[in-house]
Length: 498
Image 1 (tube, helix red, strand yellow):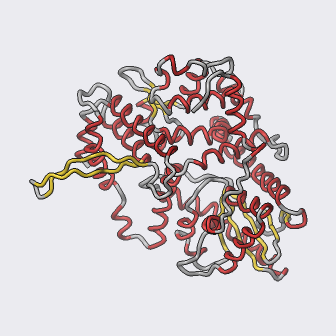
Image 2 (cartoon, rainbow, N blue to C red; image 1 turned 180 degrees about the vertical axis):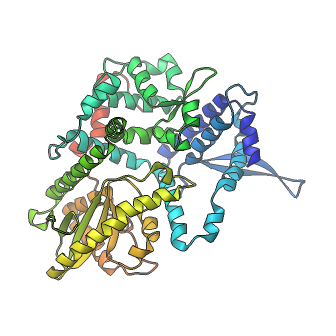
Image 3 (cartoon, rainbow, N blue to C red; image 1 turned 90 degrees about the vertical axis):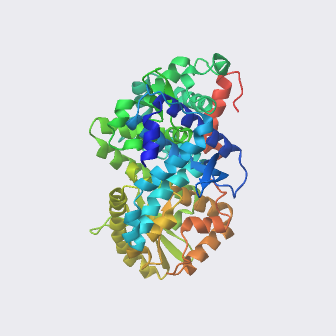
């Protein structure tokens, strides 16, 4: 642990950020080009010379993951400054990565894991893998962008009277419109894919890209919004997780604005509209008002999906009674699904390699345990129809690790074989498959009914994958807003984007 800290204390923070920010771009570019499904995603290998037994020299490789880079940069900012004499060069990358591996191991909660129960271990793994899966498959960012845009801007089925128009918030924050914001963000993403300091990128890179809608001034305005300085980072309560919302770092010595992580930049833009709206209310101390309003909008989005993919007599909202109940039901030929919708998000500190377990427990209590009582209350009512009842916790937030999440809640999922966690992306794929490839959807249902309370029990996403039901994406054609923004950008400029 001291070795890595000693190194960063003697190394220029500005150089350190620039070097590892450029490594994140390399990892990102490699990830976009790779077609190998067996390749470990979001990683890079560096050569390392080691000595075994004190005299035997060997050349090996050491691996760095994309999610390690923000932590390395955060440590440098906290422990060093721009005026140290040490340099960060490419031939040192393997050595520094190896030092970081030791530092990371020392600060892990290995002692907690040694004493934890099995569900405690799964809770810890849930936080770790939450972050890893986000970095390893960035396709979710496009789906998140499209979904957020659909709900907050595009859909004519969703009422937004309870919230301030996102267009008005964008104009107040940036001084220009929503389309200009999104087109400029795409330019920034493109620029950062080639240059870790986009504000000092060579002039030729801008040729043909800058237009009336996308100007240098707008690029600077947006990067400033997504930037943070050293003091803000050092004093931030969420520590390195600040880079999820502020992926650019403003240095002191040369006044550069450097990218901390290419992956986090894409994630911040993907969820940018949601957080622009939510932060607007948080700043006015009205955060709960937005959460309540967005919960209602999430219900309206569920209705929109059901209307699009199901016959009208197959589903409905469950009437509110004296007892709290689930939100919706969908009735198939041999099974009834009950849905409790949860639009809340897990605290950012829960999603990292050393997760804050109390934040995970808080999420579980609010979004799973309390909701389970509502689902069970509705189950008693719908059991009268004589069909099997599947109880669904439907999460708005993206996650690919619902299997681990279920394993970390044995008091529910080890005792109730008819309870499942789905994300809204899972439901979109399932309903689209039901409409366009009915047999695949029926195979998923059949497996749900055959699932048992043993170690072979699989989550819903696994069954979608098993039966090839993940190709029916909801955000295609007219709902592919990302492609529409890209087309608008191409028409606005005279240079291609690659």
